[in-house]
Image (cartoon, rainbow, N blue to C red):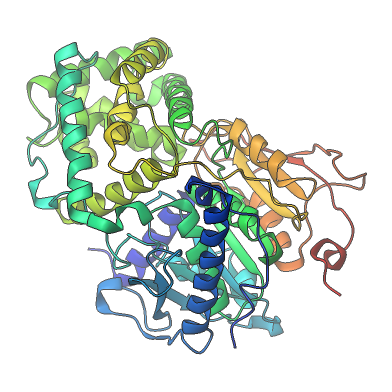
Length: 566
């Protein structure tokens, strides 16, 4: 059994390897696109005024003195040096005096080690949407974080809907199927209709269980909550670390509140192009996962002498298919069917680190021992409630943020075509998002036009792996372009693990540390917008392909001039 300290370290490592109040109302922001869902410009302006009033009121109510940090509840499983608080925000920012919700917040104070000057709070969002950042302060214990933890209060929080923050649920976790899930390789028309009916039932469950609150689980509201949290922490400007979906949240925040951005590290970037949010992003993701599945099979083939699964990716695929056919007939350990098998091997598309374990499980199964696979792929009943909550928030935010095709024929056509070249995850991804086709909330679903802010942003840092499947690399390039000349992009070339910051690549982490501590970005001298490409070989692990880091961007003057600090 792991000790509590070991559990904390494991949680944090997984989280990272996966990432008098200030005057809120006085900082004008462009009207957010979701306000444009009102009938005319007058009502849109009124909604914007109401939102600003709500932000100001929430900031005053939860200001620096209003965040009362104390001992964390036992349910958070955090050590005593981490302190917790709750932040009150409006459910609907257009109704500041309406229903309020409370978000959970955690903080580890800056250590001040070696005389480091405190630089404020570093707030983290690990992505999802649906993931909690409450364990983020524990990174202070991890190697490589000492200087950042010395200078910053490390602040995590559970976004609205997540954990104990006005938790959202779409069905009873206990009602989840307890037996193995069997997914067909090529779904028949009848199976598709079955999944469509299930998606519609799930969407109805979300509407029934959330009630009137359902429309308010959105990225713009997450950004407004983050704005209130920043003010409640006593920070005039936000220093932020976002991973995966957290990069999109950070980009939306920067668009709505550019004057309140100090520094941002955006790791494994979602493509923020409104035309791709979220339906086309998910099609792109299925293509990305297919590429990573090929990477895994090619690596296993190169290590045939270890695993005996064949010397070509095709031979490895054939072995996987034999295992899939076997668990379709007889679930491994009585718990692992084709659905659980696919989910387990999807992790190989996310993280190189699991490749040895997954390859060993295939090899053991084909030698007659299914126990290794069962141990790796069996669902954890203790995690069912958390998984249900995370899925509910994920679904609500994505469905509320943007329009989705309502016509099943569009989904069927697009995913049938895509599955011809990307069969590994296409249909599973489609069925996961299919509740959005019949979502109860229809009005005002226009994605924020990231990058449309009138002010130039301070320097920001985007970090990406070139072969990331979950957030394909083109999204990082698009995000850098939209953030403007002050954005640098650090690329881990030839690599594909999702979530680069925090221990996978020392070269990347040094760039991130330098930026957070000094504001300095990688790159050489040159006019704004020029690019400087450098490649640095990172430490090599025996099971991970060699990694290079390419740096795109350049320094543009001093920190003070870039931030507009007098």
